[in-house]
Amino acid sequence: MEQKLSQLVDRLKAAYGTRLVSVILYGSAVMDDWNERRSDLNILCILDRLSPEELGHSEPIFRWWRGQGNPPPLLLTSLELKSSSDCFPMEFHDMQEHRRVLYGTDLIAGLQVDNSFYRAQVEHELRAKQIRLRQKAAEALRSPERLQQLLTDSISTFCVLGRHALILSGHQPQWKKKEIVAALEKATACPFPAVNEILSIRTSGKKESASTAVSLLAGYLAETDALVQFVDALAR
Image (cartoon, rainbow, N blue to C red):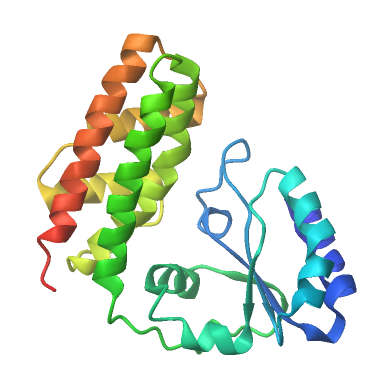
């Protein structure tokens, strides 16, 4: 991981020069919850401007970084960072708690996060996830491998949204997936057996039968709906 991060920073510095303000690592890699086989390396890259020229310089770097199994870095200008905290309160709250500055200035430390739309963002993301899960499951039901992959790939997002549901409801935030789920079970007074089983499969890599995968999907959809209803009932 360290070698990949060092190579990325070197390439970004060479591409952007003095226009590069900051490179920040965030997500599971800085939360002690990183899985080498499953987890991404999430990068925020802040520049002083973003024109087609900068985007052109980005293309070979992003292609190489995706080839390493990671999502492309997020690109923002310094001005956009300051003016978009109301749109992305979840992401910036998480970054303020856990981040690692790989290069440049730590602009996250002094960022004032606007919580005006915080609850709405969490509910929106949960409902969008629910819809996408149904759509993708409809295409994967005949393939146990694809269905299991869908479940294990989506569980990280469930846990991120679950953490913010805890914060919104006045509970202590948790950062490790198992701890998030345990706290949600207490906060919602609802068990999450399917979510816990999917987390175990994600860690172990074991293969499940078709009937087990479908049963897990049914439980996962019900537990996702329970979390949606929990957030929907919170004070606006």
